[in-house]
Amino acid sequence: MNKETLKIYRNFLKDSIRKKIAFKFTDQNQGIPVPPIEKNYPNDSILIDLPGLDEWKDIPKTDITTAIGNRKSHRVYLKQSLSLEELAYLLWCTQGIRGTVFNGHAYRNVPSAGCRHAFETYLAIFNVDKLDPGMYRYLPLSHQLVFEFTDDMLPEKMIIASLGQSYPGKSALTFIWVAIPYRMEWRYGLAAHKVIALDAGHVCQNLYLACEAIDAGTCAIAAYDQEELDELLGLDGEEEFAVYIAPVGKVKKS
Ligand SMILES: Cc1cc2nc3c(=O)[nH]c(=O)nc-3n(C[C@H](O)[C@H](O)[C@H](O)COP(=O)(O)O)c2cc1C
Image 1 (cartoon, rainbow, N blue to C red):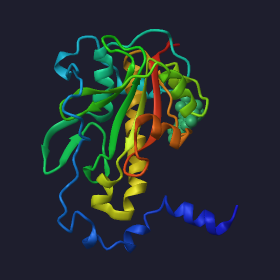
Image 2 (cartoon, rainbow, N blue to C red):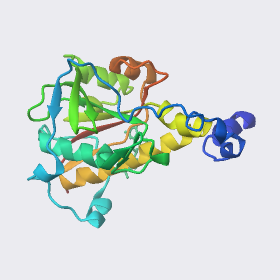
Image 3 (tube, rainbow, N blue to C red):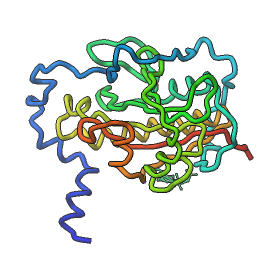
Image 4 (cartoon, rainbow, N blue to C red):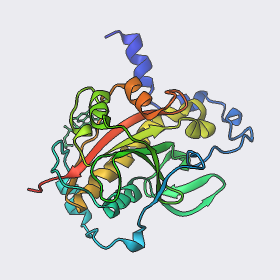
């Protein structure tokens, strides 16, 4: 491997860039309005209310030590549906908002550099009670889903977009986290990108642990066809693009 090229790529993991950035020139410090917490949707969209924390009846309490000790990647799922309540719970654990929204900031159940939370959560739904199969997106501000589109070939398209890995098309549902980098760049400029990648890890780890409570499993997926997946989701690939995939399904617990 070429040493100079390696140096460039390794620098991405370092925080040396912070010393080179004139933070007084970031958009935030230039007084440019804070970008929205959540991506907008058309007025005539179909919205689905999700049960909130106080309405959950069948989400078992799970000891955190047990959940961490049992966590592992699952790539084969039972042909069993997830309930809407279970989906609501997984969304709350991974991107749910807690507390109040102030000045374009909202604390969530995962940490995020500068509380910028640069992700949208897309969901390829295949087998969730009360939901028609199709692509949806989570709206954390109202704890709802917005229906994006449907496609009879969605399972096959998810498999192709995952470079032939079958589990994202054979799950009950598949999470696709999409980055809107400007949310982080607004605050951190060119120092935004490493922390977006770090943030994705917290989100997916919460999904792994949350799955443990409901006899479900997931598998982090970072190998996918960027252009194919962005096109499937209708993303421009610049201002918004997929960064991480995680299929979820019920699993046999050993
Ligand atoms: C960032 C990241 C990317 C991964 N990408 C893939 C992937 O594309 N396909 C896959 O089957 N597993 C993927 N995995 C899962 C790992 O292979 C798995 O975590 C590892 O083998 C350890 O197994 P465990 O999770 O059961 O402990 C990924 C995991 C992480 C954290």
